[in-house]
Length: 202
Length: 290
Image 1 (cartoon, each protein chain N blue to C red):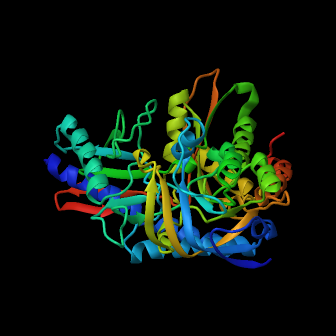
Image 2 (image 1 turned 90 degrees about the vertical axis):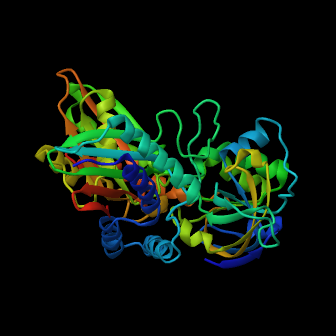
Image 3 (image 1 turned 90 degrees about the horizontal axis):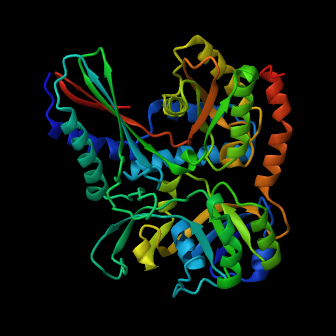
């Protein structure tokens, strides 16, 4: 179990070095992405002007407030509360995010499925688990909202955050075919019979 | 007692903001108990981070979770309370919209077909407002911001009488397995048993949003919740679905009578950020709590 401090973007070799149960802390740029963002990017032909190559994306739609534009708030948005949403709904976008945009790391909660595992193996990437529902804490790791694209989808815009000490995040799916979610799920299903027996189910 | 709709509007606004920022004491106690009982070191660390987040939200006066949820307002009108019912519902809606715009925070509510967000946390039929009556001399409004991670894991099964209680028990265990980490465990698993299809789902929601430590008033339901709480926590799903003993703070059950040919069971879950807030209007004024 190793710990990595990454400044984004990262290389394929850095992504492939990650193993489940390692931890990662991110510095630099982090992109926020959500259901509507990806539906528009991959189903409706829209493109982002951001270069996501080698970067990390987080499944989020933040709470922001409108403020006057200034060097501290270049987009005119100040962060209020930034957290993480359930990743599973966005399963089918993992491969296109990696193939078309070169994304290396996906941060989310609750995990992704087998197709994402395959994409991480084929293309060199990993899934980093954050603890869902801890947004107040997560917000303290975000320095600024540097830029925003596809903002007609607000709050599901494509957000560019600058982060400092974002983590530790747990490597929960790696490029070697390992997934902690799949492991836990298999173990839990193996205990189903015992649970039903305890309940007196015949 | 006469209640001015303007007071209700103010309370509806305050309640939404309070619910998003302050976790009820029973849920905090649930965290402490889970952390103490947890045998998995990784799960204990995660619970520790969740507990830390509660303190950070209080210290920084911030929202506990970024998901502002679908706003639900449960209203109990006591005997002797005088208020125009239409004005009451309008006031709640206005208060909900004002909270969203004036705090401000994210409106998580969109039209179901166009997906358009009015940035007001409201739309057709939302906020959800449930009105009931009580024997007390008070007006009570409870606010629940229902997060989508847990709400997306909701199930109804119209089992048949020949399947018996076994169908109910098996269904709950399988729902917890299917949910995995998607619901942000440890959760409160709400189970509705009986009624019609819609009543059954409603009961599950009532169960999921009940305070921890409360029991089903039906002794048969209370027995079932004890058994199910023990059983689902044998599965090892754990916090965030990453393994451990703390899969559910509790399984809550609510029951209703049903048809001789029916055996419905519904499951609705509440995430670990089991948020709710309550305002009580009495002769003394408005009092806020959980």
